[in-house]
Length: 282
Ligand code: SF4
Image (cartoon, rainbow, N blue to C red; front, side, top):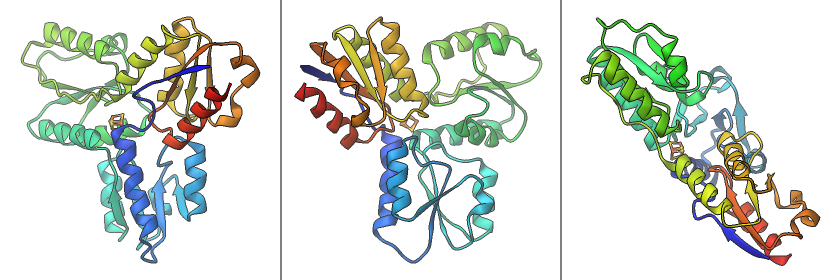
């Protein structure tokens, strides 16, 4: 069996940095309990390992006792959450991805000059809740150009455009062009999209065109992993999505000669390595 592994398979820069920060805390205990606000990563195996090391996961900031460490994950948090943790004497370990941080700063700076934020993003995504909090005023949130068209924009008002970091760049360009025509070319557009997700999808599509079947590794709750499986299936090749090596359907895969392997941005290297060696043994 020939296995072709995607160059981009596995952690993106933001997830890698966040886990390194958490590892540093775990490896240098100072007696303070360690909490993460929500899952540090969308991968159940990694979360279980951290739980075993004493890292607590909570859903709400009020659940973190004063004096504890609170690790802010790569998506970032709303500004008021960070302020409330500080006020309550929680030690913040900010693992917000530098690209998300940059988007927060750009939005905050532009909002200070005035204007309503037009944000291309998913309403219930934690990163989006954080970005909105940096706009200091009213925000128009939409997840596609048709959704934006349902809003009536006031030509006499000031607006500025930004996007959730993982949104689709092609659609963002169509939105930019629409605003240029309706509100004028001077409407500020903030460059906030991160290409890590798109690069993974592009490579998965290319790989799917060269192999008999695809294996996608990563958490079932990880949106970017599921999208990798979707784009591979859309190319018409059989595709299996697994979280761990023991889930590989070996009997089914045995019938293929060349298999493509990729993984979501929150899949650890050791899981991808183990899957690759099991496939090679076929
Ligand atoms: S996908 Fe991009 S913005 Fe999101 S955590 Fe990874 S590197 Fe950061």
